Amino acid sequence: MSSKYHLPNGAAADGPYDLLITPESAGWGHSGLRILPLKPGEAHTLPTGDAEFLVLPLNGGCAVTTDGRTFELAGRSGVFASATDFAYLPRASEALISSAQGGLFALPSARTERSSLPARYGRKEDVPVELRGAGACSRQVNNYCLPGTFETEQLLVCEVLTPGGNWSSYPPHKHDEARTDDAGKAVESELEEIYYFEVAGEGGFGYQRVYGTPERPIDVLAEVRSGDTVLIPHGWHGPSIAAPGYDLYYLNVMAGPGQDRAWLICDDPVHGWVRATWDAQDVDDRLPFGAEENA
Image (cartoon, rainbow, N blue to C red; front, side, top):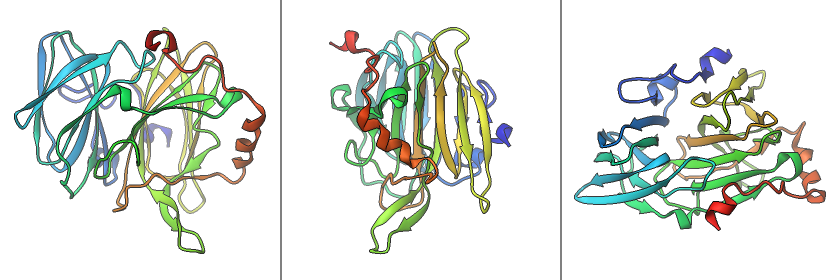
């Protein structure tokens, strides 16, 4: 089953894209991701069609021209250096992405029927950078567009950076059904999720676990390297394990059918107790990444 949901680097390359995941190729309804390399001076035209997109530099900067406006993205030298500025593109639009120096650009997307938002620029300084967990579960989360950080129709995007030897996406959690508690309060949302990985250091690697329920089985234990992707249609996911000596990065792209844009998770009840242990531990002092560069 791992081979269906684990896409090694290059396995889903198509045309100009190092990675092309659409709802059709993933076998679901909403989430998508493209990874676009551009050589110095190269440009690419992106029609958004029935989806909204972000243009999110992984390394390098670019200009994004759409509807008579140009957003200059300064970008970054790499995913471990800092968060980045980005651009939002609504459905039924077209953008020209050009890069004078070249670089690598993530294009997360979500199929949506709504188009109430304009194209706009997201400042790096406005991206909330969160240190989550503690001890060996310490990790950094760059919250680009989650509820309350940046408005989109249905797209949810964040980055998780995990120091070598640590575990993230832990305790294992899921968000594959819309559920309410006895009082009618929403406690879980239905979201498809994509994990796109990069690993620091030559030969670096990590591991990703996904497992399901008897009613909806899924079984993935993948060794992941830079450029690999894991698809999570449902089930418990975690841990994401950074091998000692190799810092681990992953880009999370989520979207689902709910009209209320929400990211509501529930922990695997077998492992949820781990959260309570963090109060007695310090956050890993290797975090945040890029602290000296950003000082």
